[in-house]
Length: 368
Image (cartoon, rainbow, N blue to C red; front, top):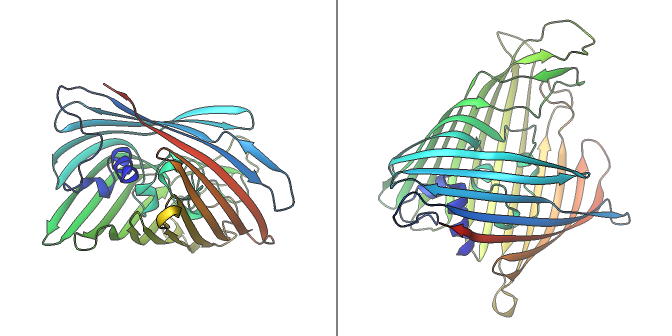
């Protein structure tokens, strides 16, 4: 229950938070304005392979700041502190200003995680919130498969019809493809033209926790040559469209999440060259009973099928993995996760590895 309330408060603009029957945890009584802060921390151990050496890293530290300015106006910010190779960076991952006209119509602007698929709309920074250590490969931060971030204007809402709840999210803005470069690395990606993103979902009060959804994203990625380019030719723009489908059943005792993503990359203005590909994952988790209720074993299968010479990707994105893990909730706010992984990246041989993660959350670290 605590996990569900924190997810509702931290994603704020995700489809799950628009259901009026689930009061979001960030709602605070008058007077306005007010401020609530949730803090997340994590530490990791990764082995290079089953017989190799491993590394302990501090992971990512996250702060969620939620401020209600009135009954209808809310500001949300997500800030991360990440340490990699002795270098620490600070980023504003999300910043959203939202006005709620009603449950059926909410208008916001800012920087989001693109509402493309289930995982990217539901789980954000703060590893404690998700069952597993890492996100699915197709949805990983820094992914070249989907644009993780989106800057623009978003409309969202939910319309109840009998026992069903029909939700939508529709946005227009700037798709941030700052992690993508052309095969060979001689060119950069600039801001794309106005991107559009659409997402719909259906939930039923008769089957709590069950959701079916579909997503669509379209963008034209503008390419430009780097200063040290080796060839002066003009690069045509690349038109990208991504379609996604998902089904999720998330209850405390049982978790089943599956997503399928299909993309199409084409040279803009009638170009003949095009590439398509797809990726999917299936994740199943089960909370044990009785004296073992703190344990939650899980299994996930990931697969990405991509063209190694895709006109948009910098390198071959093909991937396949099987993850077997166990989540141990040491306390309400502290979790230890252990995973065994069998992975194949691109055309390389498969390798085995283990990973550990200690993740914590400090809810309502500040509540003014």
